[in-house]
Length: 555
Image (cartoon, rainbow, N blue to C red; front, top):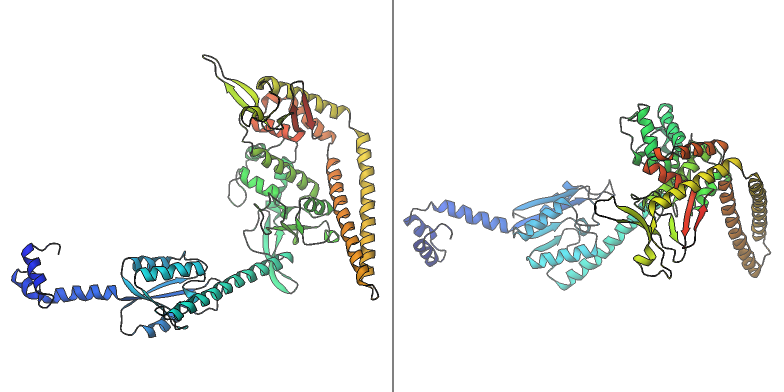
């Protein structure tokens, strides 16, 4: 009654809706036609039928939205209706614009009936459908499914709805599983699985096993940039930051596609096996990391490259390699495996260092208490009118209160100077003493392990041939399988040891030693990140006790 005075309100109420126009006309308030139109509009809005239609993203041949709407109209009669549709949305959840607008109109009291072509058009989730039925009940909304002929006003209708929605969800999960299986099957065969073409390659159509797909071919102009990046980063003293600076100095701030180089992009390039040439070094590397290798070692031909696909329950692709799927790709690589492995391991080490968030000392994360094993962290002591003094303190004593022996605070400047001195001595030692005897011992161990691996393979093949016999008893089969499993585990362990030895003998060349010597002679000119990189390259950790510092070297 907003806008009407008390007299008009009283007059309107007394009319009991029989002759409202009399009171209104007496006071000069419009005509009967206006009131009838307004009342009819309100009734029509409150009785609007919602027709909801959805076309799935999974099936191109599913029934169209237009066909669904036309079928639903048969249930409407002469009632007013409004169409809500979502074209290209899955029914696995309710995050659909048309559906959400319909819910808003229901809550606003504008809809009293919802009609769908089929039950799974509105939801494929039991939980979502149950919540939707509760919403309908709360706002007095009727629900009609044209195909299934459900009546939500009866107990049997409600029960049948719940049964059907269970099967609808089962169908959705089955479709999802088929999509997953198809992806895994195609990726294991080296088919192109979509995505942006990596820098350094072009994509061309091809046919693999009779199936039309695509493959990469080397773009020599772009590949030149990739080779330069690997060449710069493979230097022992190089960091992503220094590589980026050198690219800028050479006037190639942008790649040939017009995108700016940055450390994130460089890191991605270093981790991507799509550039490298596959060989047994790559096979052993991924084997040691727990990856799922879809090809045998004999298929690593030293010419083609590799695809990396995420496996189930894995972390970020290309960082955590455990459980990742490695497949031989149809295209050729152009980065030698030894250079790629060096850069890959280096970038992985840098990634692990970054979790320390070092900013106060280039030794952050390297100093460990010899009594409790906890790391030493930087703390600053502020004195009035003086520069703050940095100290290394034992976190096991100060924070976790578990260290049995209190370690005195160590002045960071003194410890850093001592470490630089020890690194310089170590580099000079490596230059003067190439450790040829150690290298010979490693080579002998490599030859021994390679022989052992071949022997294990031969034994496994012999046992497998035995299983193919017709007169072998079930008990013998059991023992042979157990023996094969044991030999297989020994082979994996031997291959891991071999990969480690080959990595150890990899590359303390005189050139690298000279480069390290040059770095140490210009230590004070290095950036903070460059100092961190040198420490990470040479030092595993430094064990600190009240009596001494024990250096655990990587070289």
